[in-house]
Amino acid sequence: MSSLPVFRCVVAAVVLIPLLAGCRDSPTEPEQPPPAPELHFYCLPLGVRITCTAYVSDVPGRGQVDVTQTATWLVSDPSLGGFLEPGIFSPQRRGEVEISARYEALTARLTSWFLVDPLQPAQRLYFVSGLVRDDATNATLSGATVEILAGYARGSRSVTTEVGYYRIDKILTGETFSARASKTGYEPTTLSYRVDSPVGPGGGNSPFLDFRLRRSD
Figure 1 (cartoon, one colour):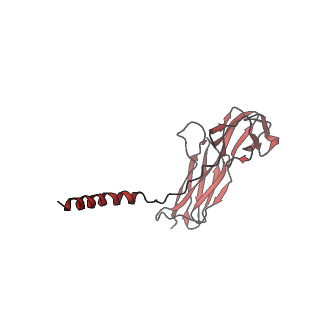
Figure 2 (spheres, one colour; figure 1 turned 30 degrees about the vertical axis):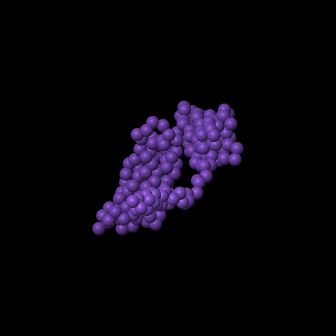
Figure 3 (cartoon, helix red, strand yellow; figure 1 turned 90 degrees about the vertical axis):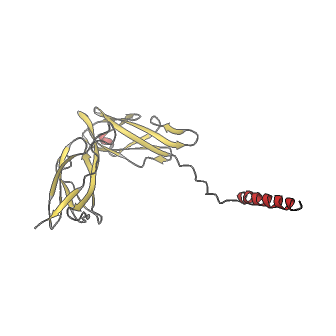
């Protein structure tokens, strides 16, 4: 019977060792700082005027806060018009205007471009971008030229980067335009396309348009 206490001690030791192992300090990941507040805004054409809303995200203890009425609204060319009311741009003459916003020490990172006219509805200006590829190999082509042939941005062009990327700004949304990609040694390709506004009803065309070029004989 003297072996019974020894058996109990062995069982206790087997149970206790994992428990003690679990009590060891385990490494913990450093606590991530909370995201810093950022200023955002979006604008929509409303007849000849443009209505804008601004908000600050990640405000400690409050989340998202609307600051439309207290933000400072900025325009690239005050002679084209201004914000006579907070968040409402009224045009004075026709032209391209860039809109941005500032609130206290925060400035919005993105801006919005519009074609405005006191006699016609405002229209958003956006961009078109994409890749130019070799149709046979699918390799991207650097040094190719993409040019707008017809439409509001007619004559605008871009030369592709080393990764075959191009971008052309101030494309009038909602308008069908034609664009041509060309490169020495390849047959040019012309496409018709329409870029839709990024703000508003979904389901429109994105600003991304790729081209494929075939080698010339």
